[in-house]
Picture 1 (cartoon, rainbow, N blue to C red):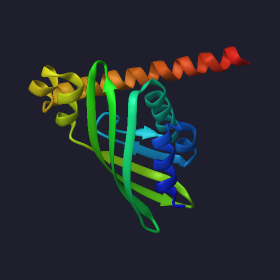
Picture 2: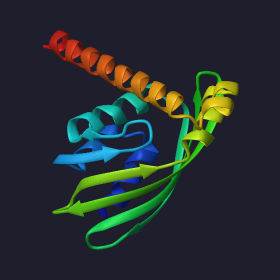
Picture 3: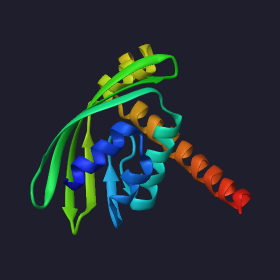
Length: 156
């Protein structure tokens, strides 16, 4: 089975551990909310998103070649109290059986209209709102990493 197919199969199962194992040690990830993450950060992002997700499901269509893959996937989940259906286009560069670069693209405005309601509808197209959401997401990831480190110390 291909790397990308294994990634999306794990994603569909909510298996962030397997997803994380498929990234190379120096991999990078970007999307409209997390513009540049390292391999460690992307592993943490998937763990945060999948452990916090409510009513989450994902479907994907994957097309993989020898050096990379493209996929179209649709995530459905509840953000706060609002249902979200986000269509994402992924491009992966794959080398030695690992993801070395992943770029996800989706309409931030479409996502923000669903996730943020009227604020997203009015301001989702603006750099101001995009930057604010990015800052909040980065802070959430930072706090989640801190909790993970604290939890691993307590388990020792």
